[in-house]
Image (cartoon, rainbow, N blue to C red; front, side, top):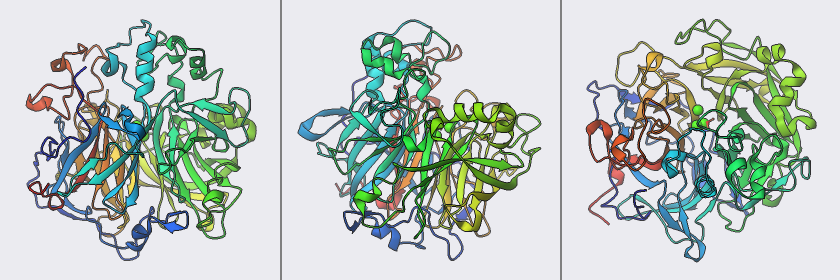
Length: 617
Ligand code: FEO
Ligand code: CA
Ligand code: CA
Ligand code: CA
């Protein structure tokens, strides 16, 4: 292992990641939406009687400092590239040390995915809540998926690398962000500790019990209107399985952990993971919760909607080929300033699954084709999920409904993030689905009947389709495989892409090159067009985009750079020999043959260049 850098290193050591910009056309993008548009996330967030996010709410209709930019060309370089006039800086990387209460040593986890900013002092100081989705055994301890057993120390290292980080950050005088360390707020949740408690109808049920050791598979998430973080446990069924069985993303913790409680990672015998979890970043003593009322499936994220006089609603997707989209309707309503009451909104209610007409999936004749053979709009209903199905929701629903009906009317093309727009409509990233030849995915828009969040009927339309546009103008070539979504205040939809690593830069994905970040205006003359704002380094996906309330900093995570290293015969990789690794980002750049380094998942800040004065620190 390489030596670890301290998280609060000096500004001089922090390497700006200003990309090489190849665009020569002056195609300056006007992303500002037409009058009346605003952001979905601009809910007034309340805590303990105070409106912490008041500035965000007041700033509605304001111009967003990110939405005018010159789009950049696709790239396969081992670099983080961003549009001209912006700079990107690494805030923290996997393995970096930060200190919590009592100066306790903490290490930043692997594969950062969801992130959200919780203000302490407006836009200058706050807490980042971050998910660490899954470990990479090769980069952690040199393990290759050859079927050989792991030892308990290796399993422990993997458990330490996942879960969540709560990170206290502040802007320096020069404008750059830094980690505040030590801080009483800084802490970690790991794959095996501390215990989280279950809430809802299945507390005490067989295999569930009353608590779980830690959290894992934390993919995306959400911020509740009462100011807590929600973290979604996605691929929970990869952890207990035997590494000798088949593929590289099974971790074998139930077999090799060596402790009796490690048996609880076996998803057949226990139901400890696969839930929507809730944490309070502001409260270091908060005991995390796992909400059984929201069902157990491969939860990607949670998007909230509350309307006066209506019950509180949560939208969720099951991120697997041919799985569904869900809605939870709480028994109660969100009530401003009732913090203790609001905290119980996720504990009781009714879960529904979407039934799509004429069918839920976009099917294509062949891989790479961009015109579907199925409808791109239609209607739908919300069908109630019985309580007996909450502990293994998709499996039990499919068994009860039958494969033919389920695949026709419930299956979709792998839902990743959902976001609720300002007008109440729901945007769903349907990332792709190889089983129906959907290579590039789409963003679907769902509107409830009469715009009522409690409605049991809806209409839908595929809003923005993935795939090459045919345009050769730099930055307008199109996107593929949408994953996380976020709206800005000007109602632009920001989309990060996740073409799987083994397919990147090949065949029908060649046009796209590396995974990237796009801005899609939702109104005006550029409505629906995806403009490329940033490119990720080799074999990564970009995750978790999130703005500060004033939208002058955009945080984004770089997940799994260099992921093929050590995992395939084409990229064998020798542990400890960085020159053999497929990415050297962020400390090096393999395509420029600059500084062979271990690739590290990292959290990046993006700001306008003029936000930072490097002479002043
Ligand atoms: Fe973890 Fe659905 O991506
Ligand atoms: Ca992902
Ligand atoms: Ca995702
Ligand atoms: Ca994905």
